[in-house]
Amino acid sequence: MKSLFFLLAGCAVLLSQVIDHNSRGMKFYRAKEYQSAYEEFKKAVAIDSTRAIALFNLICTESLLLEQGKRCDLDINPKDVTDQLAILLKMKPEWATKVALDPDLTWIRNTYAFQTLIGRNPSVDADLVILLESISWYGPSPGAYGPVGTIDFSNGYCTISSLNIDGKLEFTHSKPYPYKVLNGTIYVVMVDKKSEEKQVVVKGKLSKGTLSFEGFPFVYTDDPDHCSA
Image (tube, rainbow, N blue to C red; front, side, top):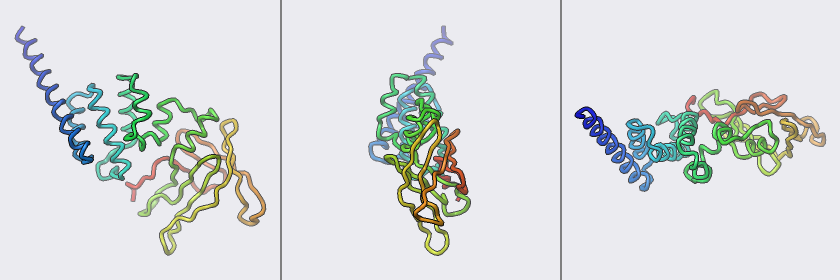
């Protein structure tokens, strides 16, 4: 009987600590001191990872910090955040709508891992369009300048940008090219570089989070990879 008493007492102490850290985290969160909130929520989840509200608060804070560009400073891996979301939705499937709509989760929602977590399938044309247009796509980051290119999809058009590292560090942007999706393949109608009047159809694929096009010098992912700079 004593052992049960001490066990219950110990659980009560741990619960009190979780509530305390979560409450402190919420004070920082409301004050928009997200880094301090992150530390408190992380402590709460470390004590008891089954406390759904503390885990949700941690995920929201991580998404906001990623949006603020704090990924490298705090070593927040977007894939880990999505894994946390998967755990949360297993515990609280009724929170799916909350996760889908909460504005603090905007950054993490715009990732391939999140979109596939909620059931988007790149082999389904309607889903492929959503994946293309809801995600920011980046080329590789081989040096200190960040991604060397981006590709943006919106309302049936895509714009290709490339970083000019000679002289001014600035992006040059293509004009919007129309694109369509058919049977899992992306078709972009571009202009031939040698003859501006000639149109060229370039085919692309999205597979396992990697976006590739025929003849392009590199592939695109949702990872800006600033930490390699």
